[in-house]
Image (cartoon, rainbow, N blue to C red):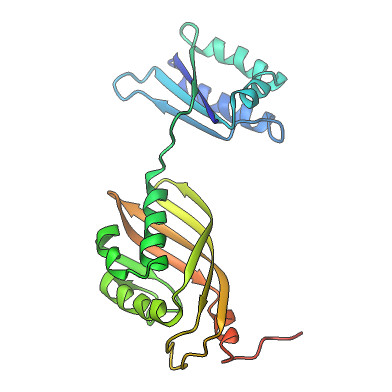
Length: 234
């Protein structure tokens, strides 16, 4: 279970505080167990600062607290604060990364179930898709649906999400796929060959929808599997 510590403090030396946090990051490189740190300032009180630090577990947080560098920085932190900071220790009960969920739904509905019309619900009306394997590197929602429908009908692919990383409004996906060439694709009649490959995609989400995506799939490797090109040999 992941663990979060919330540090609540008051200071009129916010810039010095941020510099102190930077020092801690540098001093604990290769040692710290913290995975994520956010520092925020209260909009209604610019002396009220909150830091949120995430750890893989409570035990890992304790290891981090026992670092000599952490103790030293804490003593310096106390000198910057108006009074003693408060600490709230939280065991994380739920962590819903909503943009990741949207991307997972897109993969399951549009790719694995071949339901390209589901993109109307999952994508914004002004959605743009960027993919060098399509007719243009920049296509709108309707064109993306039409071209992706051809791919679904030609290969009936199954996409496996190997990893997802989210930051801000972006979600990056590392994926692999399998399928069978059962329909015409780019003028190549069905070969009934099994195909597989890997790729990456980045999605930009906005207001609960996917607004934009960038795809990089090993299209050359796919065409080699269909026998269109001979595999490159050194």
